[in-house]
Amino acid sequence: MPLKCFLLLFLSWVGDLRAQEDRRVVFSLGRFQNVSVPVNVTIRATVSQIPPDVSFIILQFHTQHHNVTLSYVQLPGSGSSMVTAVDAGLLSTLLPTQSSLSWILKAADGNNVTGIGLTLPYTSTDPVPGACNLEFPLEIDPNIYIQYNLFETNVTFAPANIGYARGASPPACDVKMGSDTRWRLVYEVYQYFLPEGDLSEQSLINSMERVANVQNIQDNGRKVMMLTSQEHTRISFNSLPGQGVIFSVVVRDPMFNTSAAYIPAHTYACSFNSTLDNCRTLGKVSTKVFFTVMGAAGLFVCFLGHRFFKCELFCMGFGFMAFVFFILITKTTPLEYDIRLALTAVMGVVGGVILVMSWWRFGSVMACVLVVGLIFGFLVSSIVFFTPFGDLSIFHNDIVFWVVFVCIMVIVPLFFIRWPREGNIITCGVVGAHALVLTVNAYTYTSLSYITLDVLKRFLNHNFSRAFISVPLQDIDFIMITVWVVLGVSGIVVQLYRERSRPFFPPSPYVMWKQERERRKTNVLDPSHHKPSFTARILAGIQKLTRRTEPAGESTPLLF
Image (cartoon, rainbow, N blue to C red; front, side):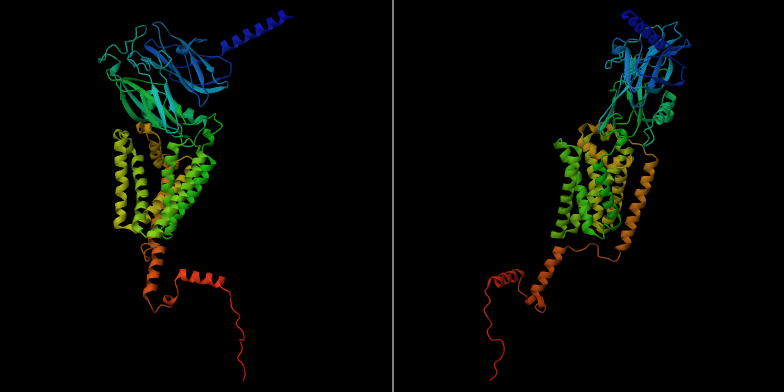
């Protein structure tokens, strides 16, 4: 009986091996292939009829968020013969008479994996991506490695080498630095943004097909920068949680005018597998509540801010203090986000009350309007650096960035000195409408939120200065820009029309009370002048309560 059980198990194992051996996927050079990789099943990817002028072939395989393992052999012994990633690739050099090639694919996370694969051929004059790798496990590593956090996304890849023929020894990487070595190569880094808010797998697959080879990358990608071989192959970008981005690198050989592409890699700057802040559930309830209230206040300020001056000052003071306090509490404490946001709201209320009371007590309209002007200047400066102007390499230096940023921020309020009412109304329209844009971002992704968020990231993260801050402007962004402009212009026009015949600013209640008190003291014809002071009236009332009342006696006249 035990022998029979062992025989059955052995036959089952042999059957599984044969089934695995039969799971072959045939690739055609330069054509995409949809591949499903079941759990515990090995897929052998093969390509045949390789032309004799091809020196090496790159296999790339892409999934949305499940890892896949690619290896050269059935049972890889170490990381030098395998790679595991959502965007994985292997480069295979060819022997002189070799006309076929195969690789091994396996699901790595215990989940069935579905993705697309592609094999690309290159000749002996094309540069070899990742052939001078000294950092990653593979001997020749054409992969792009992505690491991200809340602030930045770091893209790293291994240096390439110049091409060589089949069977030839690869040129040395770091022995010489002449024009006949790999130091003549240059690298071009590209970005391709997926449609905003689209987290579907089909969207990623369609996008990958648009940036899979050199020609497609040039046609559809956005060139971010060019690196020489003397520069570090590590670049930082702004993290955009929930926004899909594909990074591509093209290495060029200027001597032969040839090029080759690294394996494109994508990121959403968030996790599909996390139970908290999953890519599909981005946005906390506390954030939505906070920005919904702020959006309602912004809409009020946009159309009625100048008319209700105390409410406007409260909202502006709230925003100013909340921004400053959030930076301080984030840099100095490890509190959780919800607690920080609650404390920020409390301190924002305190800031709003302080600004209103300073106007109520001292009556200095110009001082309060200059604070409002600084808020407007901050927004204008943030908009300037949100444009491609902010991606100039000179602004990767913190000192240069902050000097220019503060100069723009301070210059704007100077306009308020000459035209304080008009400047205040313009601030109400623009800043109030922007608050509504931030509210929309709490519910659906829009790139316009990064106008101020990029500046906040630069405050909080010292390394963010080296990041490229370019973000995509897609359909929803143009819609929100239109809404912002329409609301802002409408609010400005409505308030200018309503306030055309009114005083420039309402008087301070405390100053009015003091003036009225002085008037009563000096005007003897005013009946209130003969009234005792407020303190005297209080003391008289107290004495009246504590003094015993004497009997009045006979209160009617006597008749004689």
